[in-house]
Amino acid sequence: MLKKRLDKRNIEEAIFKCLMVFSIFIVAASLISILATVLMKGFSALNIEMLTKTPEGGYYLGKTGGILNAILGSLILGIGATGLALIVSLPVVCYLNLYLKKSSHFALFVRFTLDVLWGVPSIVYGAFGFIAMIFFGFRASLLSGMITVAFLIIPLMIRSMDEVIRIIPFELKEASYALGSTRLETAFRVIFKQAQPAILAATLVAFGRGIGDAACVLFTAGFTDSIPHSLFKPVATLPLAIFFQLGTPFPEVQKRGYAAALILTILILCISLLARLLSKRFTEHLLK
Image (cartoon, rainbow, N blue to C red; front, side, top):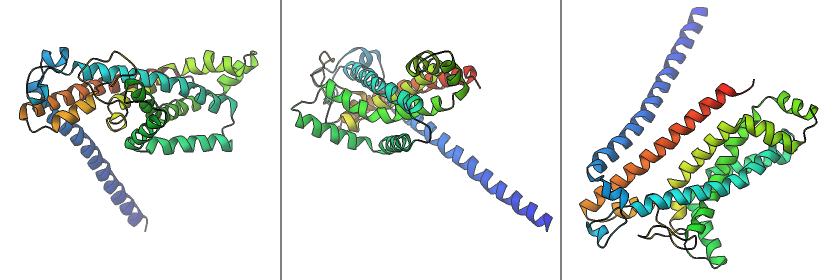
């Protein structure tokens, strides 16, 4: 009987081990396939002109020019949206962890709401931003795109920070209170200082999500061949530049679309690696 149980457990372990290896293989193969596709199709079209020039006359018909407008537009929009999201996220995280009890029904409701918002498709945020834009009489612009992207990444940023701050030892907070610190002083001088690398990592992840999304800026940020110079003018982004270039029937322009996808992929990979390094640093310095 014991031998049969051991054999059954060994078989189950072998099956689940095979499933885990297969899952890892699928994830790794997907990443390698994506990188190989954009690299093979886009590297030949990648040149200095693409990185240093804006689209010129007939660019979308295969003429000269580059995507500098989209690169700068994505960075400016992403930085602005991340800044707006950070301004909203830090007070919410502080309130959830220092002013509410962990078992508070309101805190549980807020976290559940944020989890739901995290899973909402970005096109829904784009539609919401477009409706709000029409209601307030705004036009497609850099500011509208920033606000919409900020709404998109706020749930991600809050939940990422919240999960990290929740694992900070409770004794650290109690020691700060025992020394006469207020909750606000404890938040900024103790908790946020302890979680600073993780907060930066969460901010970078949210920034990467923001600059890589096309659906939420399609109707709100618009598109232009000019370098962004005003909050109230349309702005070009890399995802939309890729979308428009790959949608043309001209092979040369399609290659440029893959080159733009390669630039965006490299940018996202760099942000992800930096976020991982900061997370590792946080783990090493976390008081336990």
